Length: 204
Image (cartoon, rainbow, N blue to C red):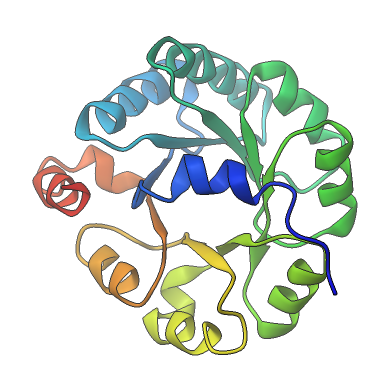
């Protein structure tokens, strides 16, 4: 039998009661801080800053510091190389998110003692993740997979919890949450004043 997920308790605490996540990709330090504040004020507790450039590293550090003042964890996203792991840790990230499932990246995260949420898009990837003792996973790209994928995948993998990422906003988030997704991630929707009340309603 596969040993239990050694990070499941962390994600249960951090994500289980937070149906939305904000992703701040390539926005720079000031814009990332502004949108993180918008997300937090809206009630979105989970904020991700993808780590792809030196400017992203600066933004991640600033958002992590601001999140710490509120007692809220911030994660580093787009972790595709083990070398990114110590950079994210040094910036203050509480956990990591990957677009795909790379056992080497998972191993690096564990070596640094930081939880990771790897990405999956097929049953084979979900099964591999389960074999690696991972129970919380990112499903990407969610808009391409569609809500039906989540309903179907729960059959063989009822213990897995999914964060849906990619192409989501106020117009379709509810469909994914109704399909069993535990957390839905939004990005540009946070810059659309028309969508903010709808997102707030979902949180309530």
